[in-house]
Length: 406
Image: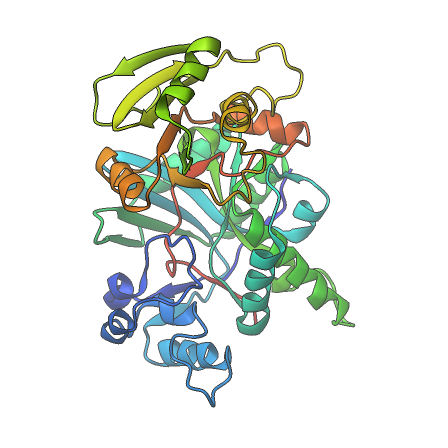
């Protein structure tokens, strides 16, 4: 089950939407190019990075509050009058993903109703906590997935057969559509449907969920009149059925002094190795890996551990770590070993090869993506995925719908 709540979304007005909304940023709180920011005064990034417009005498986060008031007063942003759910769809290259944007009760995260599969890093968690504590802006929804549900899917289909209330194409040719759901009967229907879901899982946003939970608990602690209905009890979240998500792998990039023949010899002795005559190679199935070494691409197979009772051990990323990265390169701590880099499987061949060469890696290993079923199996068991196991699409745009906590 999942307890969801509608909210009064903070959204860009039609005339400013393309100027406000940003595509996904790996670290939206890192300072961006000052000249670009100067040329884009309506960008939502001005509400994300406390350092961007701050002079020495100004409060670190106070300037964001000033900017938010400016955006509201000048009708760059507006807040919906009615608490709503939002159906969001993104389309790129004839592929679409559609989800329901809500707020979710933080207790569902705290008590394990929403299942997790990643550890969080305290430093990153604190950074997100501090931002929402100081600004009240819950900007980036936690991406949650669930087994497809016929009633919810049918509801989405009915709503999206109508024209969206907001629609635009961004500079990467992604089409974004948004439908507002504010009718009481529809809100109650969705609440009941989500309460009836057997299991829900965080796909992307473990740090955001952890940070918001800490923030909400702190607000509860200091509110003597706390009753559970306050906005700080509910975190921005978007639910995509499992068949709406796309998962990509992360490639492993390695800096090592080992000679190529040593690496290839190990593979030939333990696995099956083939040369592939391609510009780059992404595996076609589970248990298969691509290897770039000495300017050439190879593929090799590591047998899948079908009989292992631990779902984490069955993952390709675990097999690669245990049977290749550790014994060959001595990489035993992939989270902290500075010889190891990562590249999302969304990278084209040219982008991947440019990164390899520009950053001086000797070896690259590509993998077949984890399936949603594998992720759910790990989360159901209480397991933790190895670092950099998954890259999820869609990545949510910034500034399209924001949960604001007074």
